[in-house]
Amino acid sequence: MKLDNKVIGKYKIGDTVFTKINPNISLIVRRYIGGVYYCGFKNDPDRWELGLTARALVGS
Image 1 (cartoon, rainbow, N blue to C red):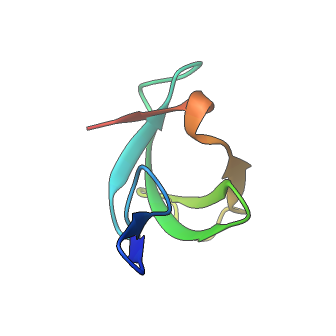
Image 2 (cartoon, rainbow, N blue to C red):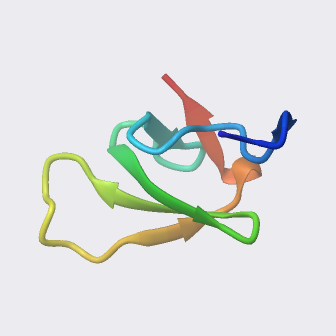
């Protein structure tokens, strides 16, 4: 994401990401607020979202 030519986050909204702890579960980035990525579960959209930092995520 860009704002005034500055990179805000590492991942864009809609990107598929995985956690470093459990890379078998795919997540979708829903929003990015204050350095926290709020991700929903790709295969189970009814589950709660996770709030994770960029350090805890791995891109696809």
